[in-house]
Length: 217
Image (cartoon, rainbow, N blue to C red):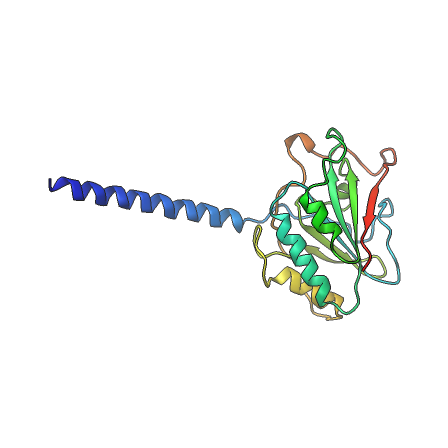
């Protein structure tokens, strides 16, 4: 009879240990950044995104099936609401060549389309991701009026987490004219390319038909 409470206590301790270990693994995953972009310092001439020299250009490259990206889009909306001079803004959804038409039109696509002043792009075969050296969903890049890279990173503080973070604030600072803003932060999100999606396209490939959608502010 006296062994039963001991067994319950041991079982409870074991369950608690497993729960703590699981939480630790989850927190570790949430705080593990993805692969950073190797973005060109100068706007790539081969890009089919239009750069307006009268304003800065902001790009977010995303995977349409990445749940972490919902937070990145929420932070983008907050960011744009805080800047005085809005940049030309693109959200670029990767679409591997072997998937059916409309594969990229998830709820994330619909969310991006609702952002005022944002142009939504289908990136056939990941060519734009390749041109901008992006590997992780949520990768955000800012180019100034001269086409010079000013920021490369993420705008969430962890995977799928919203709230104040260095990346978002850095972009707000850059766009509002601060001279001492951070130029880069970690990016938290899923890989843009799965094992079978490793980029094979290059800017020299045959021209793709880029699908664009613009939501007026």
